[in-house]
Structures are given as C-alpha cells and as structure tokens.
Length: 139
Image (cartoon, rainbow, N blue to C red; front, side, top):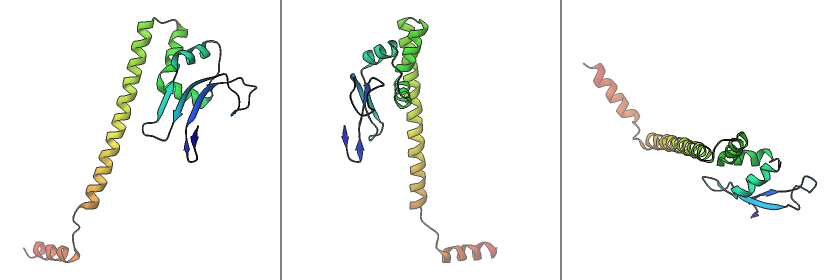
C-alpha cells in the first residue's frame, strides 16, 4: 500500500510461518502516518476475535491498538467487566487522550506564535539606543 516516500500500512492477521510482507489470513485495518493526526482504521470486532483466539500483535500494532482503546477493551473483557462499564472506561480513555493531544497542539501553536511575534517585533537601531542612553544619563 502507499507509494514511494508516502507509506501506508495494512494491519493484518498472519500465520507466523508466512513471510512478513507475504501471505496473510485477514486484513484488519490500515495505518497512515503521513497526515496529522495519523489515521488508523481498525475493524474492531475482527481484531477482538483474533486477540481472543490467541493472536499476538507486533509491538507496533499493539501500540496502535492501545492508542485506539482496543487493547484496553480486550483487557477489560478478559477481566470480566460488564459491557456498560467497559464502554464508559474506553470512552473516558479516548476523551482524555483527545484532550491531551489538543493541549499539546495549543501549546505548540502558542510557541510558534510567540516566535513569530519576536521575529516580527521592531528592532532597536544602534543610534536609537545611544540617544536613549544619553537622555537617561543627562538627568
């Protein structure tokens, strides 16, 4: 998937005996890191099925599933929590994650604006500094 210098990845279920980029059993989603925020699409019911039957996600896919709340949902189901409790905890996790991302974006934009303001501020010429110095020392 994707093209040169623009990678897009498939999230798949594959037998461990298959080559890494070779045959797979089922496509479970996609991951596009090129846009901001990165785009992750996951077929959640199928991912949950594969996790329940013992599939081991790679470290990268595990991190993507954590960010989407799928791993949290899997752990809570495994623990035996009720469906309503699981849904509320996952929604809280996702809203907290979104708030954290928004705070980081706002902080970055404020920092960028501050740098722009400093760069565009009128600079004092050396002659103006000398006249200001003589005026203050003359009193």
